[in-house]
Amino acid sequence: MLFNSLTFLVFFAVVYSLFWLFPGWTGRKRLLLVSSYLFYAAWNPPYVFLLLASTSLDWWLARRISRTDHVRRRRALLILSVLGNLALLGYFKYGKFLLLNFTAALAALGVHYSPPAPDIVLPIGISFYTFASLSYTIDVYRREVAADWKFADYALFVSFFPHLVAGPIVRANRLLPQIAAPRDPTASQVGWGICLFCMGLFGKVVMADYVFAPMVDTVYADVGRYGAGDVWTAVLSFSGQIYYDFAGYSLCAIGLALCFGFVFPDNFRYPYAASGFSDFWRRWHISLSTWLRDYLYIGMGGNQHGAWVTYRNLLLTMLIGGLWHGASWMFVLWGGLHGLYLAIERAMRGVSPAGSGRHDSADWPGTLLVFLVIMLTWIPFRAATPAVALDVLRGLFAFTRPNVLYPSTTMAQLLGIFATLGWHYAQRDVSLESRFGQLRGVAQTAVIAGCLIAVFICSGGEQRAFIYFQF
Image 1 (cartoon, one colour):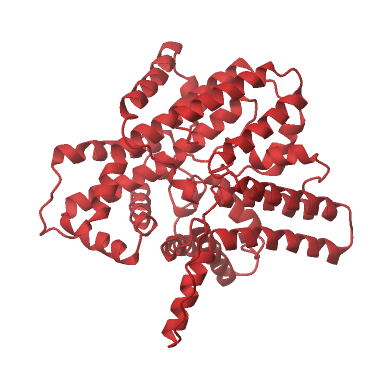
Image 2 (image 1 turned 180 degrees about the vertical axis):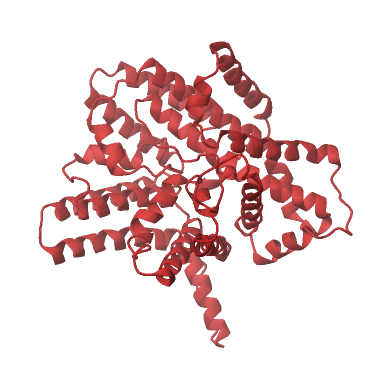
């Protein structure tokens, strides 16, 4: 059930109407819990039991952890939670990947092994809800969060449908207190929530799917046919597609939650205006980058044990972050490159202020350079195989091949990405809400009406799922 589908709009209209008809907060919470499980069941009904099992295990283990002061027992219970969550991810998300690589390793040693082809369907959103649930048990172990929540409240925290399948990864200490206390959405919250949802749909349907995606799909399907101009346009276009697709989803999720009175954290803050690579990760997929920082990077020692250990921790964190995105060495390569950039930037920090996050009107060349590197690093993220990635890299310099696509075809993509860069650069220190609030009422209405009209015009044809649904 996609946010950009008529089915979802009907689902939301029914749930939201019932939400206001239910008299008490307990009844409203139960409605949201049941609705969230129905929302998840729409993808693959049997996997509802997987979601329930993961939720039950971590809720029970967290309570056991909180009730004992025995250090070894607490640590054993935490390890059980970690292993349980990683086992789910390992089997469903990485089982086939591990088996194929094991078979290839044996073949390299001269051992022929032909296992039966695994028939594993990836549960949608498993990476997101396991990370949310796992962070809860870790926080309870650290005594940063209480474990006395009702099971129904905790189950709603994990499964709440706006963030269930693609985030943001909302922490327990942020969402559980909101679930426990009655929510009474104000008119301003509902209004801003609807505005965010409309803007998110515009980003997904118009910018990601209509403007950028066709160009990306066309060129990446047969890179060898296209000249350098076409390939550069496709690479630029994917930078726009991945941003508007995922940022669009995040805006929809944040807006939907706000309509029910729940406040989610921002997940994107104009990432293509980053002044450095650490600044980029303070702006891109913020809920994941902060999760990796707090539970992985700091857990390995962070920057407390010397420069080389810090570089190692940065690289390992980003390698694992890349693998989190999918069972492919291409994602690992993408994450490793970002880890390398962060390590180099940190090593140069004594010489250059790159990545400090401080901005002035003269730093645009550095910002443009950072974007260029990030744009090129999206190539292994988008390419299905190393061979395709190499073809794209070669295509960037295929100046002797004629450009197949006419300038009129590529104009929309180039205008779209350059407008995005200018918008990010101009707005990078101002929140979307404050900027929108500065507009007059007529202008606000015009913006939202324009978004809806554009969505209606561009919504025909193939309906694309959000890219991050596969993660």
